[in-house]
Structure formats: C-alpha cells, structure tokens
Image (tube, rainbow, N blue to C red; front, side, top):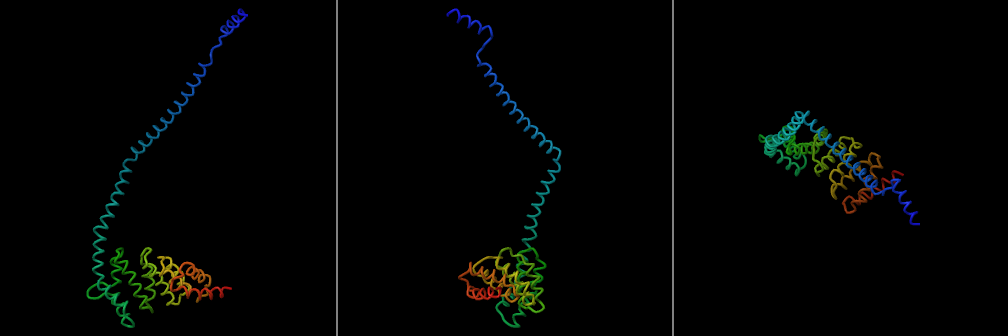
Length: 271
C-alpha cells in the first residue's frame, strides 16, 4: 500500500501538476492591467481634449478678445447713456412737465367746456413750458415722457369727438408694464372705440384691461364693461365668460349684483 502511494506521487510530480494559485494570480494581474489601460485611455482622451481647447483658444484668441471687448464697450456705453443722457433728460422732462401736469390735474376736477379747455392747455403747454404732446415727443424713452404719452391719450379721450383717434394712438403707445395705468389705458382705448362706433373692437381691450393688473377693483369693473358691450353686439359667449369670472372670483365686488342680472340675460339669449 505504501509502495503504491509512492508510485502515485511520483507520477503526479512527473506529469507537472502544480497548484492553481499562480494562474489565478496571473488572471488578477491581467484584470488589473486592463483597468490601468482603460484609465490611461481616459487620461489620454482628456489630454487630447485639453490640447484641442488650447489650440482653439490660440487660433481664435484675437476673435475672442474682440468679442469680450465689444461686450465690455457695450456695457460701458449703456451705463454712460443712462448716466449722462437719460438721467439728465429725465430731470429736465420732469421740470418741463410742471405746467402740463398742473393743467391736467385741474381738468380732471373740472366739468363742461372748462374741462376741455384745460385739457387743451395741458396738451399744448403754457407759460413757456412744453405741453404733454411735446414732452412725449422730445423726451421719449424717459418715465416722464412715457407718462405724458398716457396723459395725452386720456386728455384726447375726454375731449372726444374728432380727437378719439389721437386718444387711441397715444394710449396704444403708452408702456406701463403691468401697472394699474396700463389697465386704465387699455380700457380707455375700449371707451374711445365705443364712442367712435366700433363697439365690437372694444371688447378685447376691456378684457385685456381686466387682465393687465388683476385686483379686486379694476378687474371686475372692466369685466363688466366687456360683458355689457359684448351683449350689445350679440357676443353672448364673451359676455357669459366675463360675467362668470365676476361670479366666481369677485362675489364682494360692487359689480357682482349687476353681473348676476346680465349673466341670466346672456344665458337666456344664448339658448
């Protein structure tokens, strides 16, 4: 038995059997080598990208410098324009508008022929000062010039008659953003169109006025105006839309009761 075991061991050694630990080790080394290779490729790619970026910057350096310079000059020019042109103009415009504003305010609190006369003075100027027309023209781009544009439009609207188109033009030119004055200006255009016999065109301006500055006071007022004019033109759908907005969103508004009556009429007329 002992001799047989010796023979088996001799045969095993002769055939070259060796432990498998070394090949496994080599496999691990191979895997490690692959990882190192992949990492090297990544860094190589990054290097190539960096080189291309450097080459692009070198090649286009002059163009980039010019672009940066243009941006810088533009910023400086904008600052200089506001600082040395617009701000001084603003101050001059405010000073120039004192007489026009005085007569405009007087007209707001007057009636009849005197009212029209005061609005005319506000528009044309007095006591050596520009009127609203000239201020809007000469100081366009300033806040004072923009306000004069609004006031001129409202002045022409109050004078009425053959001045209605001027009212529309000035009020359209006014830029008040989302302020209450924008809502009033748009409603003013609607009023001018109604007075000029173009009620159908006025409806959209009243709707725009309602949305220009949403609040508890002007919004239901202009929605009601839109509905009233829409009913006179047979546009029951728009009237219902406007009146239902009052019903749903402004139950405490002064216009609520009237809107309920008109809503019933509009729904009956649409059936």
